[in-house]
Amino acid sequence: MRAQPPASHFIDGAYVEDASGEAFACLYPATGEVIAQLHAATPGLIERAVASAARAQQEWAALAPVERGRVLRRAARLMRLRNRALSELETLDTGKPLQETLVADAASGADALEFFGGIAPTINGEAIPLGRDFAYTRRVPLGVCAGIGAWNYPTQIACWKAAPALACGNAMVFKPSENTPLGALKLAEILIEAGAPAGLFNVVQGMGAVGAALAGHERVAKVSLTGSVPTGRKVYAAAAEGMRHVTMELGGKSPLIVFEDADLEDAIGGAMLGNFYSTGQVCSNGTRVFVQRAVRDAFLERLVARTEAIRIGDPMDENVQMGPLISAQQRRKVLEYVKHGKAEGARCLTGGGVPKVQGFEGGFWVEPTVFAGVRDEMTIARDEIFGPVMAVLDFDDEDEVIARANGSEFGLAGGVFTRDLARAHRVADRLRAGIVWINGYNLTPVEIPFGGTKMSGVGRENSRAAIEHYTEVKTVHVGLGPVESPY
Image (cartoon, rainbow, N blue to C red; front, side):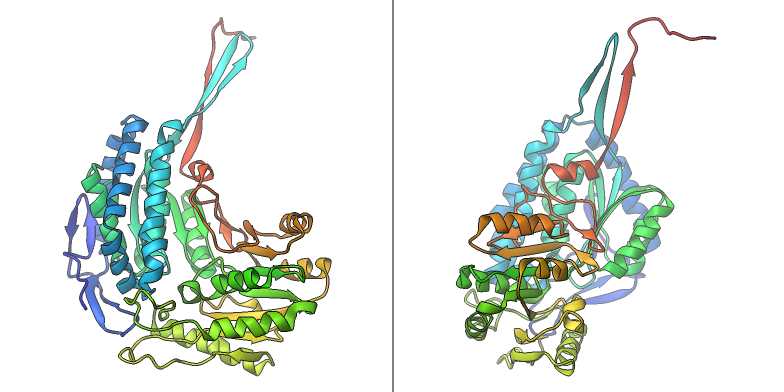
């Protein structure tokens, strides 16, 4: 399989290559084979990208908001028309099964473009009466924004960052993860085809040094990162040097709480979605599953049966439900956590090994894994694993489980399964998390805000809340009478 783009970067409306940049390979995670060879952006290319973005931003911000919205909505239509091809590319890039990418990746990216294209004309301020005088506010664009993406949802993340930024009148220079460099290039093509000016959305490839160059660039006004907490600390610090705006969507170790009155099949389905979808490589996953003791055994019995029925195999087969991890390095990390779980006394009920997938022996596979008897102090209950490893913990009462659920440095998400709606809302209110699902998990429509608290980040993506993070308020005071002065 090959997915070689015309060149590594997309700058000022065209593909650009500079072979003097550090070479790196894009691998198909299901086989380990090289599907594309690329080069990291050189300092010169980064400067070209930022300069073209600054120029295009002026042109773009001068358009009527409704015109900007039309471009984004046209891009959304193009993405939907090409969903199959974009989904197949996403599967090659990430290893995620086509069953998933057809509905969760380019499709959700199109939703973001359509939503923000629709609300672009409504981004406005307010009039403030002051007696004789009055004031008004405007929401003005920040300028050039840098987007730094992760490898689990590369196309979706590119759209989640680009759509609100562009709707507000900004330009963006986007750096995908070096593990998944391909999807963002297609988004750049589509935006040009939809009528965006050249330079409005640029893609530069590379490793951490390229992201650092963008985060600290004097002409960049805003940095939006999706990534790990250690990376977030570095990017946040670099942005702070220039007082740049930031959105940090970082990691999590989210609690999913199952009360004894929950519908167990629904709760098990939610727990599996919150641990095994995208082979567990989702920041908001509910990887600490707290099950009330009275229903623990029944929950575990059905959970193991349903987990062992998951179909693992060729990601291009639409019947396959789980693909590989992103890389050999990530597989080593996940298997090391499995060893920790066993060594610290957790019971591995199923999985924990490397499945044999005929014809895909070079892929980065890990079995979906369930641990029971997990205690709060165990490594697998504290660290973000980012793989298909579920930790099931027992609890007795509501106050106890809330205290334990909140006993983490993370605060991205949470879930509660119960038929008692008063308890559901009570628990949701007490969980320290940016988003909480009741009787569901990992649903992220563009209409609702998404983001975390504590070490899981700052700022919000999606919904009207994102507009606040891609604009700043300008106040104009209008005097209608003589100036009163004691001088």
